[in-house]
Image 1 (cartoon, rainbow, N blue to C red):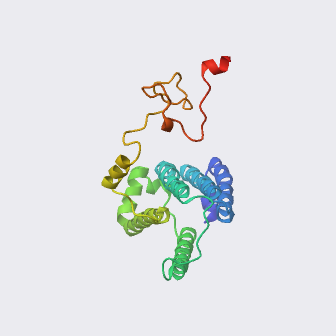
Image 2: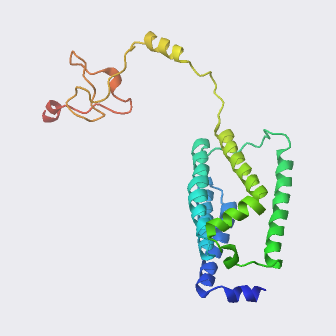
Amino acid sequence: MTTTLLAASSTGEQIGFWILAPIAVVAALAMVIAKNAVHCALFLAAVMMSLAGLYALQDAPFLAAVQVIVYTGAILMLFLFVLMLVGVDSSDSLVETLRGQRVAALLVGVGFAALLIATIGGAVVGKSAGLDAANADGNVIGIARLLFTKYVFAFEVTSALLITAALGAMVLAHKERLVPRPSQKELSRQRFASDHPFPLPGPGVFAEGDSIARGALLPDGTIAPGSIAPTLKELPTKDEVQT
C-alpha cells in the first residue's frame, strides 16, 4: 500500500514533503525543549507554517489557508498576548490552584495519545478514498460535508477546546488587586482635593519649541511644574545657548 501511495504522488510533492516534514518535526522538538516561552512560540509558528505547506501539497488549499490565518495568525497571537500579560520572566508556581489537575492532565494526555495512535493506525492500515473522491465537488464543500456529518462531534469538541484555551488565557492573565479599584466618585474627590484640580497642561503648550522636554508656560510666563516628565530635563533656551 505504501508503494502505491508513493507511486501516486508526484515528484514535486515528495520533494516538498521531505523538506517540510523534517522542519516540522525539528521545530516541534525544539518547541518542547526550549526554556524561553518566546522561543517556544516561534518554533510553534514554524510547525504551523510547515503544516500549511504540507496541506497545500496535498491539494487542500482551504486547510492551508485556515492553518495560516486561524492558527498562525490568531491562536499564536493569543499565546503571545498571554506571554506579554503574564511576563516572559515570570516564574511558574508549583502550587496546584485546582485540586487533581495533575491527575486530570495525565488522563487527558493518555487519552490524546490513544486517539493519535488510533488515527495514525487507521490512516496506515485503512483504505484511502483518494483526493479525487474527497474533492469531487471542491475542497471547501468536501471539508464542510465531512465536518458537519461524519466528524461533527470531533468538530464541536475542538471548538470547546479552543474556548477552554481562551478562558485559560484569561485566568493566567488575571492578577488580584492589592487595593480595591477606586470608583469615579472617589477619583473626582481625589482630583479636587489635590493642588491641581484642573487638567495639567501638556508638554510644549505655549512654549518656544515642540519638544517634550520643553515645559509649558503659564500665563505669567513661568514653566508649569507638572508639564515636564521627571526623567527629562528642560532644554536650554536660545539665550542660554548663545551665552
